[in-house]
Length: 349
Picture 1 (spheres, rainbow, N blue to C red):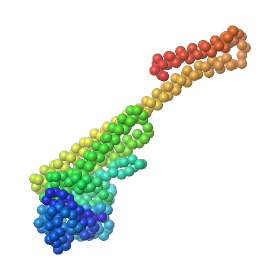
Picture 2 (picture 1 turned 90 degrees about the vertical axis):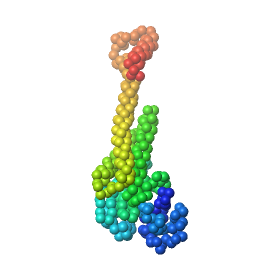
Picture 3 (picture 1 turned 180 degrees about the vertical axis):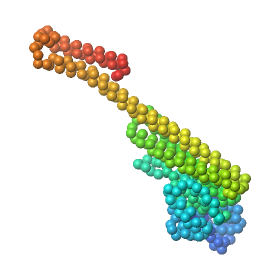
Picture 4 (picture 1 turned 45 degrees about the vertical axis):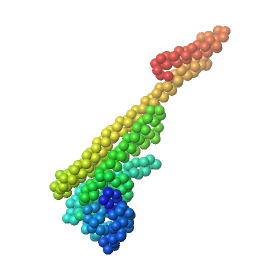
């Protein structure tokens, strides 16, 4: 699916068209009236006017493109078909490539997925093609960072060029990474608070899911950092001071997300070890308690077993004494009480 967006002078993002009609219609398609409506901030189905679009970047958002859409995008913006297809390969690694007519920045972006009825986090490739006239983004599924960017576009949105606009999309992606990492940490805290009272297998499973999500996010962040480092050291990509300043913000946010992922990952590993230790400790306490109860209950069994042996009664203590049975019962009870008191003193009960 193809979505085309434009930005007015106030930095508000508008969806101007859907489908193939959004591949930059001509001035004749727009007309003077539509141009005036767009200038005042109204939604229109198509857009194009020198006074409106020349200083403003356009954004073509492509999600899970069909072969026909892929071919038309490649033809319209002079982009290699193989480069477009890389974004639809969920195993494609992050990279940057400077072609003759465009710049390709391929990074991993996070999204939410359900695993075993639990919310988890995964990443998928996102290709940003920066041309002289617009930014073309291609991904296999909807990207949450883009939805957030459209709904809450920053007031200081820099609309002075496609490259700066692409950097701001990447910056929003870094913010989404951080948001997901904070959510993982909140869920970890909730599990720990619940585990203090009572630990269940579900807590360990959910903690494992959080740890798996952290592995995906941390690995993708490190791969993205490699791409950002290449861009930072390139003299052909970032050529203006304003672009350099904006890209430094991207580097700062990316490194902060990497640091958060590293810290949260170590904390979750520690929490997982703690929960395992707590479960083992509680199991040991239960076994110790059951062992102590077995010792106390074995005393009457031993006494009755001795007196139940088939031997001459004259050799059995208290066998010929009046009320001997009750004396034996009383002694057995006293021995049990003594054993219980001793076990209690040793903190086995």
